[in-house]
Image 1: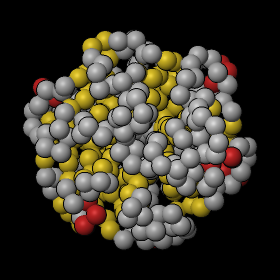
Image 2: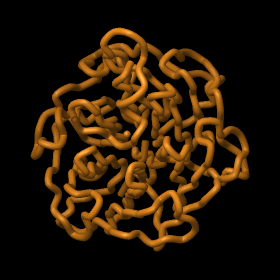
Image 3: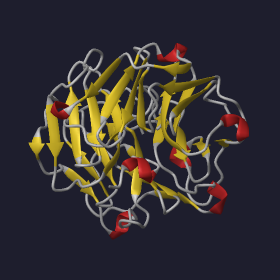
Length: 347
């Protein structure tokens, strides 16, 4: 049975990456910063795995249908080889890209102005980094730390805003017992790390407290797992400002929501579980900070779907918006599949 893990998972797939309901991929989607005068209309960044590209859609707060991207970052100069998850530092207009094909984390500064066959500003890569197949990212802006999920480890790099080249991580977090990590999320305000395990038969979200001091082999403080949780190959995760944990599940395709992310543990029933005829292979997710709209990169349907106010959604519902069609360049299954995404609501 094919797992997101096998996608590089790439979750989105596993598709880091790299934030009123506020996604606390802290700096990744909204809050702070700003992009000049006028009312922001939003910018959405989407990675294309086999397409070796990053698309930018403007008017992201309302975009729907067969819309064309405003910019395409692609070509040999970009060094993109299999881009997956993203994390966006909104205030600095800086995009971090987990690229397992390049064995690197690529960094694009002033990304809202970039297009074409342009080189990344920085690349964290080389033997000292220990990176082999980075699939997801998390950013702690206050501590200037970048967390990178790769295999069974999470590598932590200091000076995230300037890190470049063959640099060694300052810490290596290895969850124990070991498993292939499918997604990570850092709630920087509480210094809490959420990690997904998509091992068949052991679907779980593991929670690690005091993330900024963890090093070496560490056991989770709490684990969400069991049949009641409805977890199925969980991948990308996010926590909103009300403390809800939102999880993208690859098989079966489902978004599960859990109240009280700080304390939830064991075989708990989600407060909400969303399936949809528009969603068949969810990868990376992100939230609009102002209204709780959930954006989902859907690999199998080659689209981005948007569910309004995910905190109140439940059951089998149609997406409120669908970005798909030939003009979008989102491709088809096996060809330029969308994997990662990041949202800037300030520009």
